[in-house]
Amino acid sequence: MQIKVKPHPDFAEIFQVVLEDGAKRLATKNFALGRNVYGERLLRVGGVEYRVWDAFRSKLAGAILKGLKTVPFAAGHRVLYLGAASGTTPSHISDIVGEEGQVYCVEFAQRSLRDLVTNVVAYRTNMSPFLADARMPQKYSMFISGKMDELYCDIAQPEQAKVLADNADVFLKEGGWVLLAVKSQSIDVSKAPAEVYQMEAKVLKNRGFHVVQVVDLEPYDIAHAMIVAQR
View (cartoon, rainbow, N blue to C red):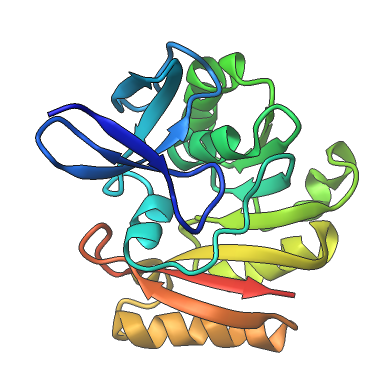
């Protein structure tokens, strides 16, 4: 069976792939030709190189497959990514925003940032890394000029929504979007995950956001959800 690739019907710069065995996957066009980031498969179809997007490695891909209705990232957008780790999901957002966009990556762990810089940022001119604590946006605000179109937050902190909202106060443009990958067990292991998701959504509402969707990420990520909101 021949590999088939077609644009996602709802989201720009995201593609749907049918592999040789009939398996269906998501993909993005590879910004850094010939290089993968986390062992994902590279496909060349019609003269274009795509990276298969693994929903079990990327919460954003998992959320899309679970019915996410809004993916605000687009070509030319500027994105602040909190908790970039070694760059799995940030690299796919880098593919989406393309040459005219920029992904500002904040990561607290030195080893993860080193891997991000060595394996990803070195080959992608549209990514800027910062070794910083996302709880203190004032520490890196002087390095980022202008406002962001979107903020994406994937951190293992007790106050995930608060950290995202604090950064949005500094960086997010009016009408901009935020995506929060909630890790319920980092917040309160005594509560059911669904209760924690609602608690975090309430924090965003109290900080002036309109929460448009909460997507449970199982089976791709246990006890995780993606919250999408607009201010």
